Amino acid sequence: MRMLGSAALGLALLGLLPGPAAWAQKKFITVASTTSTEQSGLFKHLLPIFEKKTGIQVRVVALGTGQALDMGRRGDADVVFVHDKVAEEKFVADGFGVQRFEVMYNDFLLVGPKADPAKIAGGKNIIEAYQKIAAASAPFASRGDKSGTHAAELRLWKISGVDPRTGKGGWYRETGSGMGPTLNTASAMNAYAFTDRGTWLSFKNRGDLVIVVEGDRQLFNQYGVMLVNPAKHPHVKKEPGQAFVDWVISAEGQKAIADYKIGADQLFFPNAGR
Amino acid sequence: MNSLGEAFAAAWKLIAGFDAELAQVVGLSLQVSLSAVVIATLIGLPLGAMIAVERFPGRQTLIVLLNALMGLPPVVVGLVVYLLLSRAGPLGSLGILFTPTAMVIAQAVLITPIIAALSRQIIEDAWREYDEQLRSLGAQRLNAAMTLIWDTRFSLLTIVLAGFGRAAAEVGAVMIVGGNIDGVTRVMTTAIALETSKGDLPLALGLGIVLVTLVIVLNALAAIIREMALRRYG
Image (cartoon, rainbow over all chains, first blue to last red; front, side, top):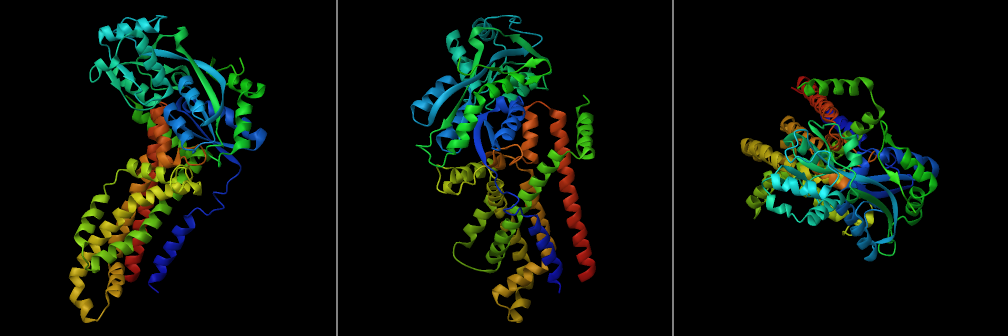
């Protein structure tokens, strides 16, 4: 009889176990995407529209672009939606993606403390700004995580002729984390940081950070979408995955992207097929 | 510096408003961590009891190993389970990566050593105390183990609660194998990590307060059950 109590407790616990019914799957696809699209709130706006139209649920795993492409390479995603054109083209050339479509763009920004120790606020030239930051040894927080934004940041450093690794441990600080955490770090130590506009607009913990450089043509940030190649990974959900790709580059999907705003600011500018 | 105040306000708003989305996240947290703790107990407890009463070569090594595994870093567990369940991995054909099932597996792996190692210690201590008594009654080792589990059940309950606490609090493993997918694999800890990333620190901390409150409530429930059982069975 004494076992009765614990048996009842055990049953109660087991009752909490999620049965297969609770996890029953409706039709869904897995999309590997970037922290910038997830954290800016774009997917929260976009996906319900797509799901309502097609009945296909989209499960987004948000990672850095490098990791997201890697997820596609391993066959753990059906669609990849990222922003590093060079890496994406290699992904398709290596046979992991079927075909890359351009979807939308926004731009990168350089943000920094109001005090502006490198005296670059209001500038339009990102290369010059980088050179001044290095010359002033002003703190700079980098993603350091092989994301699309990190890749773009490093390409610009290369053009500027400065090797930021010389400042490693000093003014150049790699956080090794996502855009949000990197902005949190920059905000806490009044450092400059290279960010995409979407994450910046939705980021709340700005502290003393303001935009210091924007509007340079080199700050263009293109997003691409592609189906993971079913020839490499036969379990890839080809039809619903392709349906999603087709929808985001369709007139309707493009309009939904343009409609997403935070306050008065449009975050992403559709440019599929252009 | 009123962000703590803001956090409590946010927490209160979350609880009082009974947000459906929050309820879903909390529900999934409980489902995943309770499932993991049930599985870990079903494996860890008999394992701990067996090691406590049996004598076999390599026993000391096994104990050291088990004790060390209590400190398994969640990220490492997450990564290993990820590589196993990934489509490119050996169990990829199951297709359970980025599902709650994967999260249960990761957490169960994480806390089974805790439950096994701690129950081994407790049962072994009790075994030393009652060794002769049980032997004189002619009890076999298996029977002895069962008796000892029953006798130490209240201490073992604390171990199970510790395991649950560890499961419910960890973020590294579930983030990797679950993917923090909105509405599917988002739990309390990954939601907190996400809000921190978005720089919404009050909301993140608010969610944290909700999580801690939840764990306290569960522990209080366990304490009440224990109290009732003590009163009834002495």
